Amino acid sequence: MLHIHRLTSVDEVDRQAAGPLISALQRRPDTVLGLATGGTPIGLYRELIAAYTRGEISFAQAVTFNLDEYIGLSSEHPQSYRYYMEQNLFAHIDLPRERAFLPNGATSDLALACERYEQQLESYGYPDVQVLGIGHNGHIAFNEPADELQADTHVVQLTDTTIAANARFFTNPQEVPRQAITMGIASIMKAKTIVLIAKGSDKAAIIREALFGPIRTQCPASLLQLHPDLHVFVDSEAGSELP
Ligand code: GLP
Image 1 (cartoon, rainbow, N blue to C red):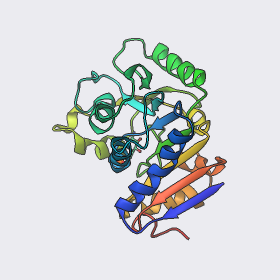
Image 2 (image 1 turned 120 degrees about the vertical axis):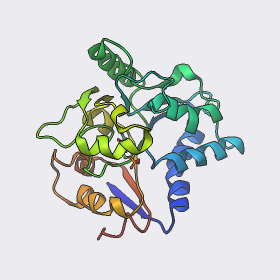
Image 3 (image 1 turned 90 degrees about the vertical axis):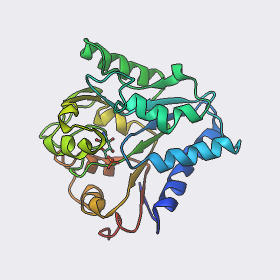
């Protein structure tokens, strides 16, 4: 079932999108959260930190799984997703790091890293609430448009558009990794609730296509139409092409 939350400002998107995560943590302290990176969820993480600082939530018993990680960057690299999570969330809350999972993109045995990640997800029963952004080409996590999509955690070749889009975070575009480990479409769809966030006019066309276009692997986000509890949070710009 699709619930669209059209909000007037980016601040309101951040506040409202944090709602399902905050209430899940309040209901069950050992909630499993699925987390995303990119520019989009930073404001949501700010809201979570604020709620934690006010004493409304604790992460002491929580578990987090991130969607993806670059291959070939160490966890101390400022553009690794582990580093991003430390900066934007983990360092400011009481989440025990042994329960903050990200795929290991710094290992030589990538197949094993993928298999282990899927097993860890399975052992915790997959996220209760999964946060998602959306790429301009319709990718979710790093599941890029293709004729076939992979179900479980796997290694991906990033497309030129994704490399170009993510180059803004690197000092030298040559440094952007060409590969990543990502949760698969089936792993993502196993989350009980999905919070999909889009902001800005550059996401308007793809968010319409994802939610109201045909369900096809060339637009991986369109598979979310099949999810039983999908909450979409858009600002007026990203929502401007929605019916
Ligand atoms: C990145 C991430 C995705 C993210 C997307 C959009 O490549 N792997 O998880 O949703 O691109 O990023 P942004 O929020 O910066 O637009």
